[in-house]
Length: 272
Image (cartoon, rainbow, N blue to C red; front, side, top):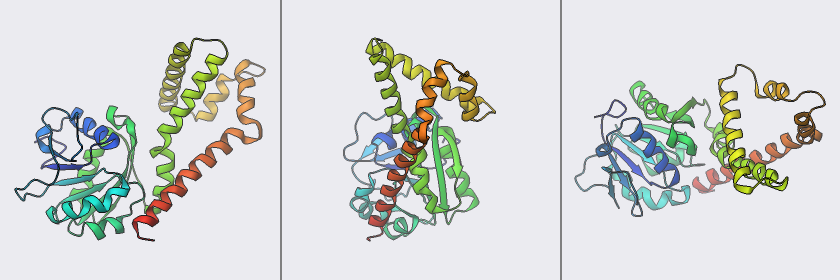
C-alpha cells in the first residue's frame, strides 16, 4: 500500500480530468494495483491499473470512490455504483455544479463526502484543488488532503456556494489562459514572426512570468508596473489593456458567465 492510500480507490470516469488526476496519483507513488477504473470507454490507461465496465463482482467496497464523469452522466452511473459503497467509503466528487445534497441523494451510504474542483495541471503536480467536505471525520479529511496535496495547491472553502466562483476562476481558468497564450502568439505572428516561433515565445513567456509571480512576495500588479517603465514599450501596450478597465471587464464577464453556468448545472442536478 502507498502512503497516500490505505485501500482500493475506484475512479469512475477516466477522461481528461479523471485521467490527469490518475497520472498525478501514480507519479506521487500510488500503486496502480490499488486503482480500479470503472469506465466502459477507458483506454490508454497506465500499466497496472485495472479497468472494468462496472463495479467488481467480489462485493468489496472501495476505501475511496472518485466520481469523475461528466455531470450529465451522474444519473447514468449512480444506480450501478451506489449499492457497492459502505459508510466508511470516502466519496470524492469532481462533478462541477453537483452539490453535496444531490450526491447524498444518489449515494446514501458514505458518511463522508468531499467535493473537489481541480484543474488540468494536476497531471504535473501543479493543479489547483478547492475542497469542501460534509460529514468528514478527522481521518477522512486527512485522507482527502493526502490524495489532493501531491496534485498541487489545496484550498478548503468554508461554504459550498463558493464553488461557482472557484470553478470559474481556477477550474475554467486554464482554458482561458490557453486562449490568451494562443491570442498572444497570433499577435506576435501578425507582427512578422514565424507562427511556430511566436507560439514558442508566447508559451515560454507565460510560463516564466507565472513562475516569477508564484515565487514573488509582491503582487502581480506591482510586478507588472516594474516591467513597464514610464514612456516605454511595455507601458504603451499596458495602456491598451488598462484603458477603460478593458482587461478587468473582459475577465469579470468571462468568469461571471462560467459561474452562471455552474449554478445552472447545480439547479439541474437538484431537479429544478
